[in-house]
Amino acid sequence: MALGTRQWTGARAERRLIPLLGPAFVAAIAYVDPGNVAANLSAGADYGYLLVWVLVVANAMAVVVQYLSAKLGLVTGQSLPEVLGARLSRRSRLLYWAQAEITAGATDVAEVIGGAIALQILFGLHPLIGGAIVGAVSVALLAVQTRRGQRPFEFVVMGFLLIITIGFTAGLLFSPLDWGAAAGGLVPRFEDSNTVLLAASMVGATVMPHAIYLHSSLARDRHGPSSDPGRIVRLLRATRWDVVSALVVAGGVNIAMLLLAASALPGVPDTDTIPGAAHAIGSHLGSAVGVVFGVGLLASSLASTSVGCYAGSEIMKGLLRVRIPLMVRRSVTVIPALVILATGVDQTWALVLSQVVLSIGIPFALVPLARLTSDRTLMGPFANGTSLRLTAGVVATAIVALNVLLLYLTVTGQD
Image 1 (cartoon, rainbow, N blue to C red):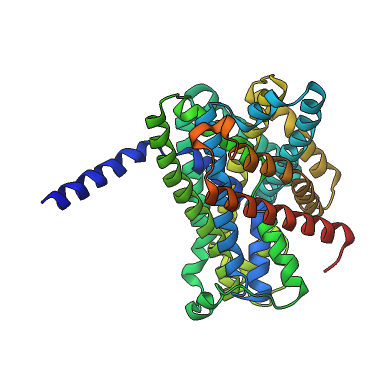
Image 2: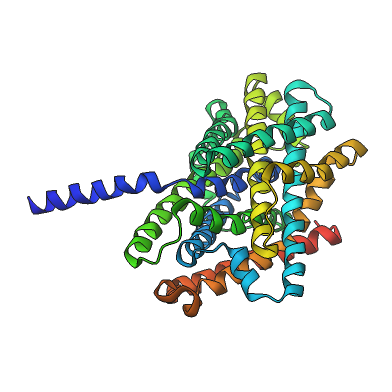
């Protein structure tokens, strides 16, 4: 009887954590943005199930990183940009803000271009018109956060995540998966130098700087600062559930895209670009599946560009101690993407360049996060223990090394 009572009490306690979930689902949008689509589909189309393990490892790394970001916000009552801003000199703050702002802007360019491509796929719109529509809709999405608060915004983003999940996984219903080969893909291995490059691209593009900066703010703002150790323990427990749940969904979507390509698009050319991948899916799985994929891509772009703009606002607030209204900021930051679309610059090249910029920015977010969450003078009794500190160090080192490799191979043009 006592055992049954404990089990019931434990289940009730877990249910009480459900209303605390949400911030990680907003941050998780960064893991299913348009930049991930081409890499996942290309990996599956070119190498079958070989690199499934890469996405599993990348997702495990992401869980650690996003948990640490949320933990910093909950324990200190400050976002990562705010903690850094308080520790840096004025000159250092300005330089740090400049690089963080550039990475956030690069993210935004990629998302708007992805949305423009989606609207071109679905409705044949000119990319410039599509980019303007994406910018306008993202203003409306940010208005939800500004006028209704964070919780309604979380629900909106979760709704988009559901659409993304359906859009990017629906094709699996029409694909003859080889589950044995998929299971074999969990064994870490490479086939040639190109698979190493592809793996570096997949992992290196997984953890986005803006998601690291933003999650600390999302967790803090959602739950509020607290000096009660018992409440912090409860919030950290809820955060673990939040992060794991959100990234299981995001990671599952990425794996599903690779499985889709491995089963339905083996050897199909041009899957290394988003338009090429979308065309291949429509041609090989039917136009309806292609449309659903396009809708998922559009939802991914709209949600991720809104979250990216939100992140940029928090970066500016923390490092410059200046807050510009989100909708004003959105109106300004959409301009670079529209200029690129208007000048006819190759969209794939622009996306690649944005990933290079992100690769440069990732160490500036990831390394301080690992160090700060292990600092007992800052985190007190909630500082990372030995095992988490070592894990954070290994994850940070691996991700930074892969981004450096990706940057080097991209700049030198080596395959």
